Length: 329
DNA sequence: TAATTATGACGAC
DNA sequence: TCGTCCTAATTAC
Image (cartoon, rainbow, N blue to C red; front, side, top):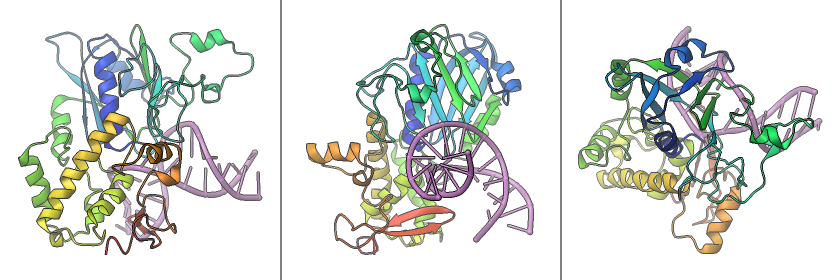
């Protein structure tokens, strides 16, 4: 589920367990063999997320030139972590999967497709696709055999990260990284300054493009994907088809602040929680049921939680856009 | 077992 | 506006 929040969590996981370590880099699948050979044996020296992009910095030693690994998970990429993986209050489990389906522990029971905060389950043998001959011992072995199409494996003495299905995975020089970053809109988790907010407001308020498209444009603002877009527009009471320049300035500012708010929650919980002030009961429901987690996302044809009007589904720019025609008039 | 789906983004018309 | 790329889980048959 690679919207901005997951990538920040992934960056933090690398900062915690890989930065400062020497890393064996390989491409079990073979499709990144050349890139892997350029990084193999270097130390990871930094880990940064900007929007949906992950940047991992490598160097031979303190004074050596830097190389970066840029990864974009696209619509179904994911990182799997295993071994000695730090579990803090916000990154459940020793061993987990982050990205497409969020962070998912091998030792973790998962709430549907989302991250779990609690390590309470048995190992998910189905995910590991263990054959019946395989023993418990092979489950414990380190490093584990790569499962499926692993584009890149990053391996330290004690931790391993497997990347599969990325839309982008490449080795870059520092100036090339700078060029990529220069094309990205602000990420409230990277820059929460008034200047960043102003930049967002100015760009939106000058474009004729519909706000529903602008929020998905990574050069306008970083990290928002299809789920957060729908939910942010609903929370703002904003018709997705409103041209950016017609959205009142205070509404645009509110959008930026709400994105920042939801992103913080997302990084903290590992979930795209978009409904505030839930009761204990509703919160549990939101975590367990797909239909109860969002205001409008994936709720086509269901009654709006606020006004009862049926939620509309439109395909815009090849993506599904959900909204309430009454609350977002 | 096959078809469908997904929380992206890019390039060709 | 399309087609394309990348992978795995879910759903349909």
